Image 1 (tube, one colour):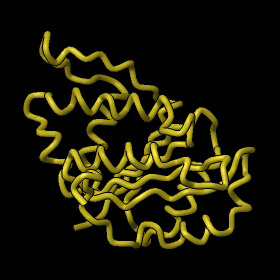
Image 2: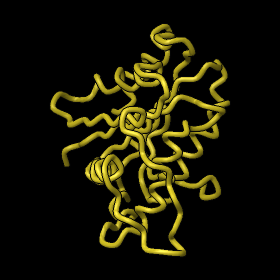
Image 3: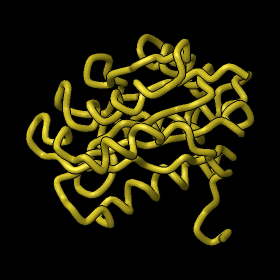
Length: 192
């Protein structure tokens, strides 16, 4: 099966450290690997309104419809979110919230179609102690586990000011092989 990557950028800063690290990892993909980049700052999603117990879930429109289609078309989904208050950015959280609605869209079969695909994460943080990113990692791993996806882990890099991640030689080295690793089926922590 030909791999198709969707990179969902969730930074409030254009060309930030997380995006630089994600693009460095993407450069290592084999030639011809399909890539789509979706920047949530340039194409923001509407707030998610949970109406699942009150009404039929409305079909997405505009950017949300495009992102749903791109998500379903991807074999590999990459969440590129800086570490904001020890978790994913508000833009990425809104995207994940929309999954709750997509799970209930008639005829979409979101959960079944996402099963077996691979979820990856990329983040830059201003801490040298990467354990502070555990809530972000847990959010992505548990989301993948719920959908029966594979989880390739999170590529972590250090950087605060624009371009700082370029000096994190260990992160840049990890980026060279990040997408080449075999991603196991995601499991909730209690399933280990």
